[in-house]
Length: 139
Image (cartoon, rainbow, N blue to C red; front, side):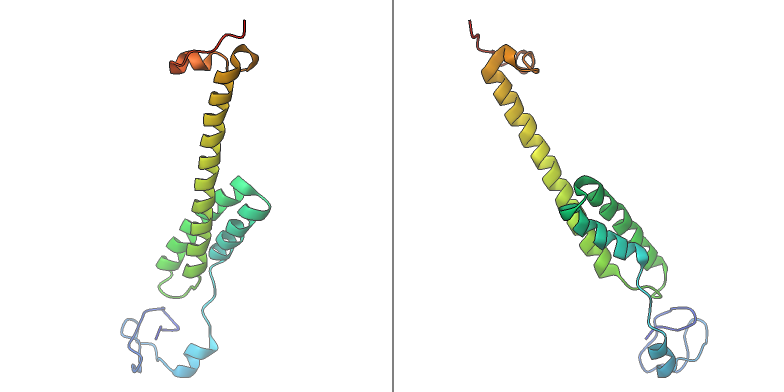
């Protein structure tokens, strides 16, 4: 059970808070539900939006606000909820960023391979020389 005044965790059968001495009545604990962290909600929403509306920006927002939410929840002393929402937002954001990096690497790899095949017709025609692969001549 958490103290309604200071948020300290106490045994379930306790009558007063061990930290601040406030009375721990069952009615006060049920009347005041703990609010959910707004940053955790933003992290989850941005993590979902990264897959639907705003790919890279949403993932970055999900990761940043997810870490901020977890820190805020940890420092609240039990007064805030939403850790699960923040973790889900973090996971969605990190997975999306990993997919973005993988797609970028595939584009670079296949772009270099394509340019190596077509020689001087590509903007990156000299890139084959830099990588040590000969560029086939079309003449």
